[in-house]
Image (cartoon, each protein chain N blue to C red):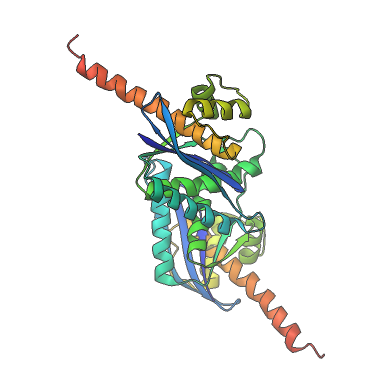
Length: 171
Length: 171
């Protein structure tokens, strides 16, 4: 299963693509979409949309995963982020890619096994889980890979459970 | 000047197109983009994007106007709205249409002359200002026409002032 994780942000949107069987994961690609802070929001959204379309066209993910939007710290920042998230969801929907949404807690738990893990721990575990030799370019790309791993870990488990119960239905 | 006003909403996004010289306005078209409440957000965003693209392709606006996002009442609702707004800004940017953003106060002031006007007052004044005989289909379309009128009223005034001061520069 090929999963694209997206970590939305107005200035930097991280992305990461993995191939996964639900337990072992391999990084196919990752990167950061940077926008010009001086550009008006609509041009930044256009740049993010264009870049995400290229990522999807290049890597053909079967599923995409994003974090749920949360607004614990700053409502203004969360509102700006929601604009980017809207554009990311649109690009995913337009490409007919299945979407998974996960809370920050779910993402951290599935990568580090602990919901309140630090950014650096997440990055270290992403590298370990994917066997990535090089350090990940940025926190944003690492976060994107983390949400992709979260989807790959949680989704097939459900599907497998369903298949198992169907196969062993006579037991 | 042809202006497209957009009133963003997850369930209903109003739109209205006017031709205006800054003082008198004529309605070219207006309507509401409705989405299915049971559809996941990404599919609703896709539907809104598709519909807005058709509106722009049909009416060729030179400018588009939206209200600034505000979060006085409900942060969750505002965050959802911001997703739609992000998609609207993207569609406008992709069509290379100039964007204007106005506060609810500016919109109401320029239509009703009073920043705290009621929804019905806005609707009545939009009809009066545009000479529209029929009642407007919905509040959302009326609000979209109001933000278009706001843009048409505020923008050319600035441009005219600039032109005047350039022409009469010797005085």
